[in-house]
Length: 572
Image (cartoon, rainbow, N blue to C red; front, side):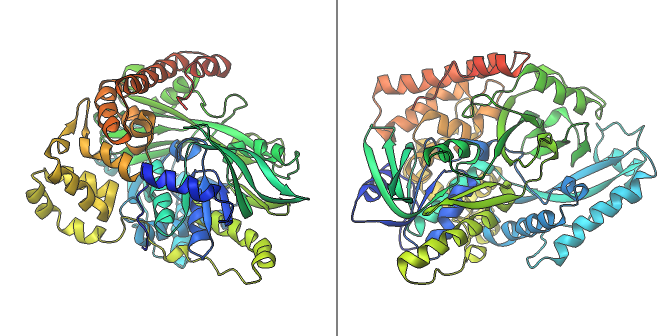
């Protein structure tokens, strides 16, 4: 890459200066730093377009850090006869696993329990179709085919699964990813190819010339600086905030986005003995029990949400619902004391009818409500690259007229994300790296799964500052060096950013990251120039956030949970 991909504090300042420069008009400005927004920025910049991206909070601070963390085709969409969506998504799964992000995406196996003999041919046919769609795609599959299992085989694989009422199971494979890490990595890749990325920058209105949108008015939330950012095309990828963006152009827009809340629980891995995850149907949705390192992720719910979009809250009723359903599958039931972490996210579903959100497809739509503005909504994490391609294809129609040239086709199916290069080589060298760095091989594996070929950068930090080569106090799965790297290379600006998105300490520890907060803040302070008062403010804000979330999770209703959660607003 001609430029560094580091999202450093200096890179953010330089991006804001460039975006505000009236002589440096962009071809494309993307609004929204979730997976669709960063994917759109990468698609645009790799086509040769001058590209910028602004996000009002942190990268992946909304939906894109609160998913089930699966890269999958979606078995349940086969029941909706949504074969096109499944085939598209399952192709993207293979592409991400084998070519674009092999360091971040990894296979995971699931058991689909069978309670009656008659279920086997029905479910088996669906899973066989799932595998067939993957094999018929143009990208490598990357995962094994499904297998039919009998009851004794299931009991050996999953000793804690209740098998007395089962006739067997089908074991099939999908993939998983740290969703927030994927977003940050796509953003870094876009920046490395020349995109100007600025977080904590809120769009307050559109610049217009007649009917045409020619840019946005924005404010840097860190300093209060106001900017006018000119662009030939603005792409709105704001997810559940789509309606607010539509209002800025006079309420004109044809997208009806309904926010659907999904919550997940995180429990320690030793609470459920199993070599595979589980999937089963509930009366409202699908329940996943997903392996996640030393933990399990259990989810999800699927309910309308019309309250605060920035901080969707999980209620006691939501948590009870998931525990009740997962306990029907387990020999030893889980209770609230087993729950390490809880998180809630909002899916931006396109609504064309009054169907319940659990019945709405995850298809996406691209519209151009006024000249110079493209809006995209719907979709799912797995298909972000296709959504981005469609958004820039739509933008290309406007750009052809203003640039007097044809916009090149998308090439993102051939652009590996940062860290993909050298990942396989460094994985083969894991023992050598372990000896050289003086770290356990398991620690090197952890770093490879987060940084891929960029592991060299983190190990260099450890070598030059040996004090960073130690586990974090209160969160020993992570090294101190990972916190510093999050600030210098991954765009972290606040304590929340590191504890909830650059790492997943906030959901992987019983104290929700409280013990680690002060140590992490001190490490960040050295890189961001915080004084003691600012460092204490960051810690205090985080502790208030944790307490607000705990209070919300004790409330019975969404309304009560929302009121408790919003009592701790964002620090910026």
